[in-house]
Image 1: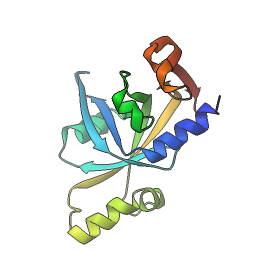
Image 2 (image 1 turned 45 degrees about the vertical axis):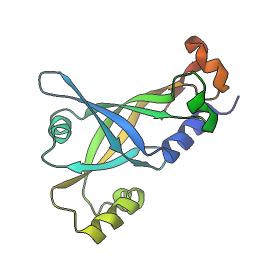
Image 3 (image 1 turned 30 degrees about the vertical axis):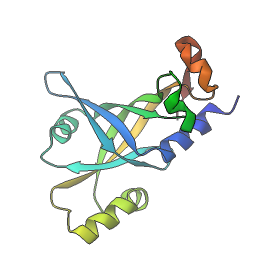
Image 4 (image 1 turned 180 degrees about the vertical axis):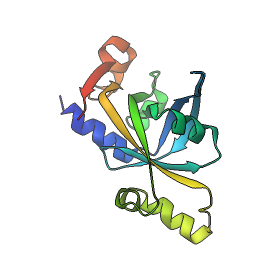
Length: 157
């Protein structure tokens, strides 16, 4: 079996969509699909300052992220759920000129500069917690039909 931690880092870097879950001040969940970029160690994304998710994250910087993905082209046609990464993370709001933002969100920053869309944008780094749960990572596609065999846990730094 491949080193799961390296496989998880590769998936984080290759994927670009995830489900971000936050909680409001009453503890009620709110989820959004967002576009992100990753260096394989953290998730970086932008959103608007006046959004619900930003308000929630400013009050509580603990979030949950799910990254669903297809293992290969055939996965879409085989009756099996998508493979996924699930983890808790802590967010930090970073300035636009922060080196990590400049490096990891370069494509988004270039688009913003060309389009003039920068007002009210916040730049966020989400650092995974101690464990990342996986579904379908490091196992053959057909074994994903048996959920107990498809799950795993990766220790994170």
